[in-house]
Length: 605
Image 1 (cartoon, rainbow, N blue to C red):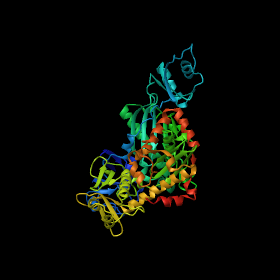
Image 2: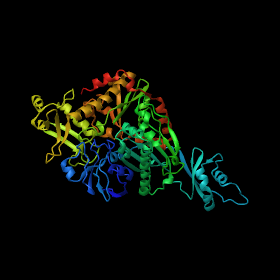
Image 3: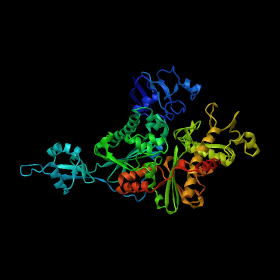
Image 4: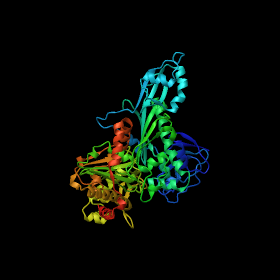
C-alpha cells in the first residue's frame, strides 16, 4: 500500500500491519522513536492528513483531546492504511545544528593516503607483449605495485580503449583504474555515528576541502533511544542485528547518493571512509553482536581499529575503498571520544585538562600529573529531553535559553517561534536559573509560592508557580489558551539531579584517581553540539561542571566529526588515534566502592 510523508513528499510502498514508524524507517524518513514503539515517550507525534483515523492507540495518554481531534497520532502505535498521507513537524533539528560545528583545527595539514596518477600506457603489440599490469607499472615507474582483483577485472576493457589511464593507488596497491584523466576526482567520507544523530561529511582527499555534509537523526532510534535499548532489540530475536545494521548502512548510502546529486561526483570516486561512534554503534556498524556490552563486565568484542573493504559492507562507493573504523577505548568509551581527543592538546598530560561529552552516557576523560584516565557514566536521557515532561530534541520551537529576572521569565526558542517544548540546553538553563534565584533549593525541591514569597521573590516570579496536590511546576511559557503552557515539573528537576550527579561523581572519582584538585583544572573541553549551546554558568550552577573561570571552558563543536575527518585526511592523525586509544586508562565506575557515596553527595545542588 502506498503512503506519503510530507513535507519531504516521499512516497513509500508499506506493508499491511506496519506502524507509521516502521514504514518511516524503511523509507528513510526520520521520526523520533525514543521508546522503541512502546508509546511511552510521545515524541513520535505525526499528523494524518489523509487516511484512517478511527483507531487511536494512546494507552499512556501522550496526546491531548485537541491533538487527537486535529488528526495527530503516535507513529509508533498507528498502523498504515492505503493512501495515507502523513505530515511530519518541520523543524531545525540537532542534525542541522551539528552541520555548523565542523571546522578542522588551525594548522591541520592533510596527508593523503590515496593518490591518483594519470599516465600514458602504450598499447600492446607484437613487439610489446607485456601484460596490461606490467605496462602500467612501467609507465608509473613502480614495479612493486599490486593490483586488486576489482581493478584487474576492469583492465581488459580499459587497456583496449584508452592509452591515457588514471590509476588510484593506496599503500602500494592499485585499487582502481579508469580511462582518461580523473586525477582531481579523489574523495573520502568521514562518518560520525551518534546515538541520536548521524553526520556524514564528503571531503576532497587531496586538498582537504569539505565538499558537502549530510546530517540526520539516527534512523536506529526507531529501535530504541539509547544504546541499551538497541542492544536489547538485537537480543530479542535472530535477524534483528542485521536489521539495525542495515539501517545505518542504508543511511550512509543515502548520504552518498545525495553527494552525487548535489556535487556531481561519482560514488566510485570515493576511495576512503573513516567511521567513529560509541562502542555499541561501532559494533552494529560492522554487524558485530554488541550483546555483552549490556551486561557486566561490559566487555566489547573489539577495541582496536578495524579496516575492511567497502564491498564487504555493501557500501555504494569504490568497492576497494578502505573503511576504517577508529579505535574504541572501552566498552562504553568509544571511537567518537578517541576522535574528539585528537582535536585537542589533552594528551600532553601535564595539566588538569577535563574533556567531557554530555549525552545519554557522559563520557569523561581527565589528564594531569602525567596520566590520562577515562570513564563513562549513565547520565540517562534527561539532557536529550527524553525523560522530561515536555522535553524534545533541539528542533524548531524548543526553548533553548532561559533567564529569570525580577520582572519575570525570558525565553529564547530555536527558530524564534512560539515554544512547544524544551531541549537539553534549555533544561540546564532553566534548572540553573531556578537554583540561582532560589526557586529550587539545594535538595532539589521546587518550593511553593508561599515559601518563595517569604524569601522575598517578586510577584512576577511567583506567578510562574503552578501548585499541585503533590508537587509544584514552574511555568516557563504561558500559552494564549492555557492548554499549551511549557513547564518544568518537580519530576523534571529530579531527572536533572540524577543526570548531573552521575557525571559529577564520575569527574570527582577521576580527579581523586590522578590527584588533581578542582583548583588545578586548567581547562575544560566540552564536546558535541550540546556543549556548543549550553551556558557554562548554568552548567556550573547545577553542579554539572566544576566551578572554574568561564574563560577556561572551551566548546569543541562536533569534535567526533572533526576527529573522524582528521583520521580520514591524514595518516598521522590516523596513527595518533590508535595511540590515544591504547594509552588512556579506563576506570570502570561500577567497580569502584566509592562511586555510590560520591553519587549521593553529588545529588545536592
